[in-house]
Amino acid sequence: MILEYVRRNGTASIQELTENIGGSPSTIRRDLEQLTEGGYLERTHGGALLVPPLRATFERETSLNAHFQHRQKSAIGDLAAQRLRGGESVIFDSSSTVVEAVKAAALRQINLTVVTNSIEIARIGANVPQWRVIVAGGTVRPASHLLVGEPGESFFENIHADVCFIGTYAVTGSRLTDATMEVAAIKRVMIRSARRTILLADSSKFQAPAFATFGDLSQIAEVISDEGIDPAVAASIASFGPNLTVVPVPAQEE
Image (tube, rainbow, N blue to C red; front, side, top):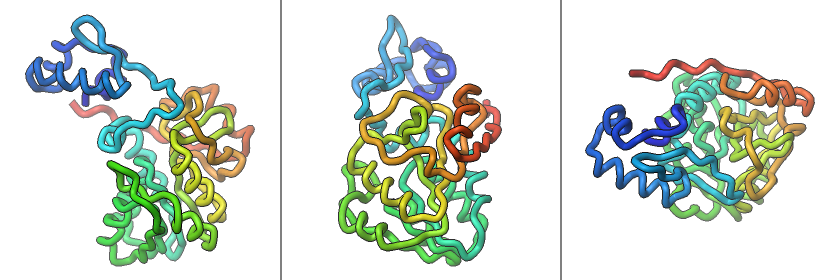
């Protein structure tokens, strides 16, 4: 909640955060210290300033990342779910925006063969009787629900799915990048394993590249983003090949 407030306003004082988010000044101060140590914020006198992560290997904690840009991710996920047709096989990567698409797709109750490297997505799919859920093997990354490495990578090399929903840490020009080599490696093979790939990327993802490249926009059939995307970036996407769909974002609830 602090990150979202500071993202919308650029900066915030402890008093502002206390009044708008709730909690005591001492609790807000401790949370700011934690976010500053994690590299999310820069402390100012009596408050905080949002710092865009410039380190190529910067990774948000999974629990925080799911809430960051949540309204945008949810809107993107709702639209992405409408791209699926009954009887299709679909690869879902573990990105937080893709998880929103999975939640929306589950409500449609259509027959799907779901393949994923995400334990969280597998749990969601386990409650959808119309889905056949296949989980690629691998090693669980610490503090996450994500499986990477073997035998997952070899598994994806040997399947041919109809569609792949994939997220990204950053889109820079035509490059798609992630903060870690092992995540980039499994995303790379996922793209190769599908007839078409749809990239789900909220407007904050169009930034400086992260550490490892896993793909290119020329490999993407469609990019789904939100209305906060820079017009110049939006105009450039078509030149790389994919269609761009921009979704409106519901107003912030009071």
